[in-house]
Length: 287
Image (cartoon, rainbow, N blue to C red; front, side, top):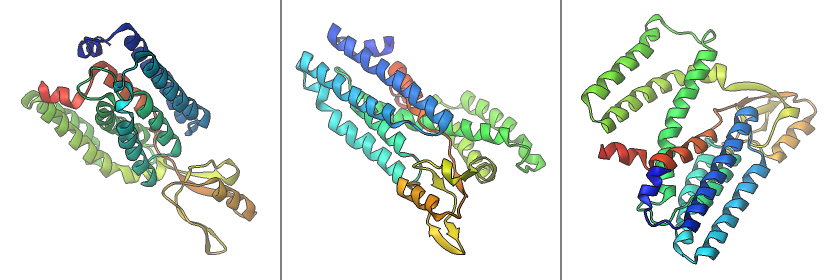
């Protein structure tokens, strides 16, 4: 908060109140959404819709009290950028619909704050890529650790972790912070991708009863009945119509689905990081 106040020296009491209200609302709702996503792999619609409604109400009240167009000025751009990014992730099969709605609420509520040089949503987007990459790598590592007995590894692969740690220490010692970070990130990302296929087979595929399917679940393969394709898999996941079709078949009892690492906690962590430190990539460049 201190870092943010230094960035906004002309903040008046009403603006401070609404800025704090916006951040606290986002942190609380994103914490709930992240917890639900981790627990059930689904974000309840009521959480998403409450967030969107609260974002609109808070921004409008702020504008009506302050009569400052800058409070709303960046909202269309924020919606276009963050909404467009989330939609691309959705149609690409990387995110679920709940993630898209949560990010829409974020784009409305945290589009910008008066006095900023770079609007909050832009810093949020940059930070989310970094936080998301770290979060995803850690997630894959945890899944690998949990299922390590099922994953066959060669003797020399056991030296990978010590090698990464040693390389990281050397990069930090000899290179500027930004280059060291990028070097470490590239090494970890390359290793994670090399292991991902093996981790995916044991950690991200589940056999689920048709009765327990939920909207947005991703099929692992096409569902076949009597040797013919009964339902094709799609990147956007199952619709309610798809689930009704599977249930009505009477013969299909279970299907294999792909489960990913719940992503919405990234939004929670990114809001906190952005509020406290601003654009962390820009900070590393300026160090």
